[in-house]
Length: 289
Image (cartoon, rainbow, N blue to C red; front, side, top):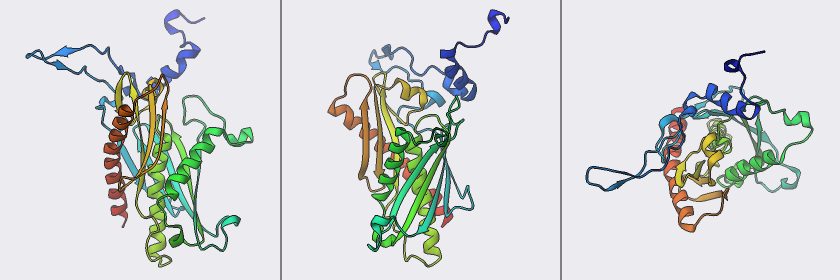
């Protein structure tokens, strides 16, 4: 029988224990006590804010996109957002679903899945359970809607683009990372058709990206990781075009409600973060052109 100092964590503590082993930065205190401080002049100063990775409230996690990660796909990007990693592959097939035939229009759709050990405990593959879960359906539809809104389907012609988004490791924001990465994979795939002379120009009218924002302990935060998302009083996903148009917003009050002014604050925070994401997308695409 193990000594007390060698005992394994209790069942309800295993997830937190494992996260600290995997992501040591997450063992930092997320939010210290919100006590007022003053400077030498006596004027009030905001309390110090601690976030995993030591980020400011309006800072994104470290963002990295690796194009061509899978060489057999028409377009491929591995997107890493902090500890979240999503592999996005774009496939272009001739033809469209039966209900769209002979209309001269294309179609963009998405599939989303999470590898069994993308999370701290193994999640069985949905194929093992014999059906796709509600969360997966929701995210697949979100990715598809987000990208279809930016594509000229007439210019695409009767072709179908399938965007496969597979979560390799999850630490919050998998759906927003999937949208951001899928947009780049889509443009890479369409760019290949342009280079081959199949299309005169890319049917993607403008880039699309997504990020999360939320209110945690009364503070508006950009790009929530898992711990912050679990504590959020308000959780919001924002999908936007490069020109600033909103494609979709999903905002939920987890505790109580939120005001119109708080909603506007979160939208402005998301827009500021998305400007950096669009710049990163363009840098990747320009390097491949």
